[in-house]
Amino acid sequence: MLLAVLTVSDRCSQGLMTDTAGPVLVALLGQQWPQAEIWTGLVPDDEDRIAATLEELSLQGAALILTVGGTGLGPRDRTPEATRRMIDREAPGLAEAMRSLGAANHPFAWLSRAVAGLRGSTLIVNLPGSKRGAEESLASILALLQHGIEVAAGGQTHP
Image (cartoon, rainbow, N blue to C red):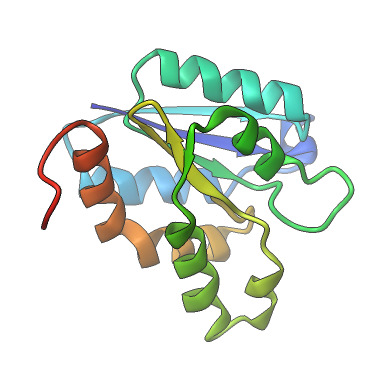
């Protein structure tokens, strides 16, 4: 199974900052799916580049693509727009769960514009760019992702 973590950051892509969130997500995915191949990549906050990368990964058969960053209110935060261009069907409950569970300890979680959905059988989920936000968001939906990936691949519809 192919899983992907795509970090979206101008500063990281320019070498001005080190991505700390992406590696944490890779570790969590590796614990959940130890046999999976995990692809990682880094692109700037550019809607067309994000969309093209999501399309390429889905064509390669990725079961899950996690994007990291670009979900806030900043003028260059365009990850949700790129994701919406690529998905066939939204899965709004995933983003709602992350915001709701995150806001219990971090009220700014309500400002996240993250979306989630399917492109064919590839599940795409936007996560925040901070290490803590990304880790907590993924942890809050990990069991849902397990089931969602199985169902999207044509598997069982009830846990």
